[in-house]
Amino acid sequence: MNLAGDVVAVDRVSVRIGRVEPGDVVLMISPEDPRKAVAKRVVGMGGDSVTYLVDPGNSDAAKTVVVPQGHVWVQGDNIYASRDSRQFGAVPYGLITGKIFCRNYGSMS
Image: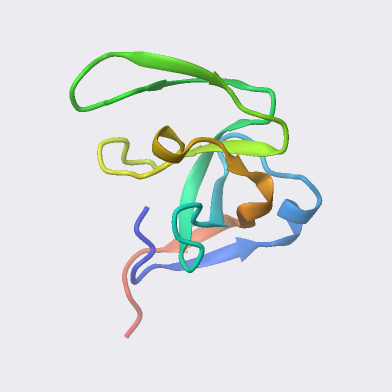
């Protein structure tokens, strides 16, 4: 998901009361650059086993990890061009700032 020019509606309450689950798209502080916000899809919660393609463009090799408690496994919807948990590992739940529930594509002029 590219947030440049997109307008999103974010639910910040669900995150605080622990109502995030696999399949949700969340807004979070980037674990690679804390000055950036990124949107990713939650694939696994603490204690879940997640199997993912190591390099989706070049092989069928898969790896399985168990998500540590207090963390989430996130992936971008474009697995060929997304930096996500496949590169930086499980993300602390505390980096999630909201759950995206509506997205308007394109910029508003």
